Amino acid sequence: MDVSITVNGEQVSREIEPRQLLVHFIRETPGLTGTHWGCDTSNCGACVVLMDGAPVKSCTILAAMTEGHEIRTVESLEVDGQLDPVQMGFHETHALQCGFCTPGMLMTARALLDENPDPTDLEIRTAISGAICRCTGYKNIVSAVRWAAEYEAAAKQGV
Amino acid sequence: MQTPASFEYERATSVEGAIASLQRLGSEARIIAGGHSLLPMMKLRLANPEHLIDINDLTELSYIREEGDEVLIGALTRHVDLLKSELLFRHAPLFRDAEKVIADPVVRNRGTIGGSLCQADAAEDLSAVCSAVKAKVVIRGAGGERVVGMDEFHVGPYVTAVGDGELLTEVRIPLRQGGGSAHEKVERRAGDWAIAAASAAVWLDAGRIADSGIALSAVGLTTIQLSRAEELLFGKAPSDELYTQAGEIASADCSPSADGRGPIDYKRHLAGVLTKRALLRATARAIHQEV
Ligand code: FES
Ligand code: FES
Image (cartoon, rainbow over all chains, first blue to last red; front, top):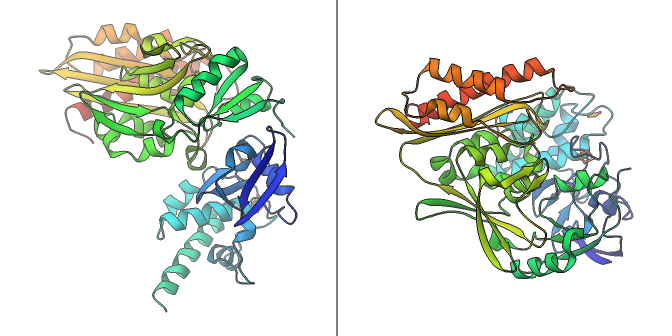
């Protein structure tokens, strides 16, 4: 079947099998291997992308189901060389080691801050509770999201 | 790589259209909504539908509203909306108890109440929740609608009263005076299936239990309705001792199997403890000691 899916603001049109999962559609699009494919069972969160602004696990959605919706992947965070505050936070607080979980963590964190700009540590932990990190022990990831929240609050006040 | 077997895909543009497709395709067709129960089964080739009918565009099936003496929930209502609904929390707080611990927040953005109920997995929470509050479901086919009580909804493991050519469209929660409800679950970590879970609702009249609903998840082949415990409670005043007895019935009447989540003894023990806790909390809510 032919599908046309909006990924990071661009229409990607391709012929696919109906059984193709969104994660594979995205990764087979040139230049978009940032979305990671981990457990394949909606447990690890490495494949999280935003669908109409809400985080979803792209290993458990058919590509065909997303036609007509806006998909945002980790590649959309950096704009013209300027990192998104959540990326800056991960950099500042050393919130990644191997980096495998990072794309999903970043997109989950971005969606959280879009909905709740000032989350508590518990709210951050709840938001990322569907994402597994085998390296960091999560502490620095929580710090990174807090760092980004504070950075964005300061930027808003023009400090 | 886990990939489902091949199938044909179509998107429904109306409830009638979805039902017409289901009628035409018969038992080879399945409805897909959130897909977070069905797609994992398809990846494991435990489900191999030849046709998928995607109902995600049928936004008319996504609502939570009060009408007469019922709260009506559209089948396409997602877990995240059940979690956030103040209306539902006010009338049936066990939904929020359950939704806080169903899967994880990202999965809750997709999964739906209709999908959860139709999957009829014994470890799934909403089946027990709906049983405890004595919900009814609306099933629509070519010949019109029928309304089925939760006590008749589960036909067996993964099998429900929804037949070929039919679509579950709505869940109805009756509103009755003096009620309180709660859901208690123990899981190993966020997103895992329950080791055991218990849903309870009680309706009090002049300090006595006029009616109750108790159901267990994950400790048998299907959701277990504890009718022996419900009979025990009938007409009695709530007490710690009475609920301990109800818990003992729960331990005896469930039929868990041993797996990586624990041995049988442990699960029976949990079923008892969680039943008692759910009853205590439901009662406290019924008499407004806790919200
Ligand atoms: S690959 Fe999707 S949740 Fe792990
Ligand atoms: S940084 Fe290695 S899995 Fe998270």
